[in-house]
Image 1 (cartoon, rainbow, N blue to C red):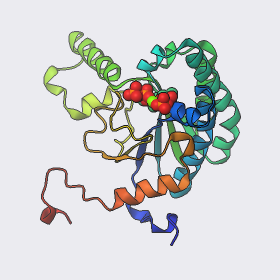
Image 2: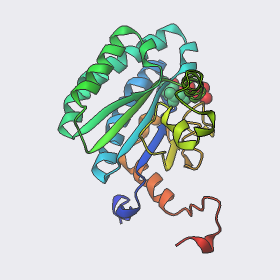
Image 3: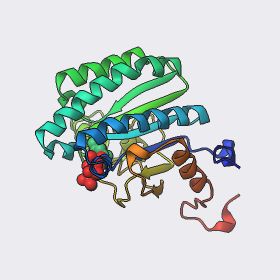
Length: 246
Ligand code: IPE
Ligand code: IPE
Ligand code: MG
């Protein structure tokens, strides 16, 4: 039986988040510069987005650039920013055709102007699409996001608009950049690293984590199906015991 038909369609995660890792090592394996790996990662983005939308996943978040990634060699950072512009421009028509809305989380105003503009255009052009939301995490880090939310709430409290006692999980979640987006049920990281690297710390409090040795440029639809099948075989207890689950 093929992998796709093993997926239970009424038990799909609503939101899948992916730490796309391993482009550099993939390039090295092919005897090419790191940027070659990033370029080949675009195909994996396309395939994963298409597979998720076809299945009926409602939100797909892709970690594309962390706040820490600015520390990389300037040439690589520039290449990534250029690739972002190119990819958005090339893919926008397909996103529209497939009824996919583009969204971004992270400190995107600090991206180079060209990247920022391309991103905003992509978001604007696809804003009415309904089938799935594709969220790019760009210049994103979870600690940055949590600090921003805290500052925002502190300001509201200071001005008397918010009572400190009123700050509960919902209020806090509403101050994060993922406001309105359900938490990911499934988090995938490629390339064999078993860490979170400052991604969605609040939102993954109860996510199922799936680590695969596959390098991102090799990631295809079947890899996504495999991760979803694995997810569907897990028992999510949320603190309860098995017998309490229906
Ligand atoms: C992920 O691949 C892409 C980004 C972080 C932008 P890497 O570039 O981190 O690849 P490795 O981990 O060095 O192999
Ligand atoms: C995490 O990958 C960030 C993205 C995938 C965008 P990194 O390759 O930057 O993570 P570390 O530095 O190995 O933890
Ligand atoms: Mg990496």
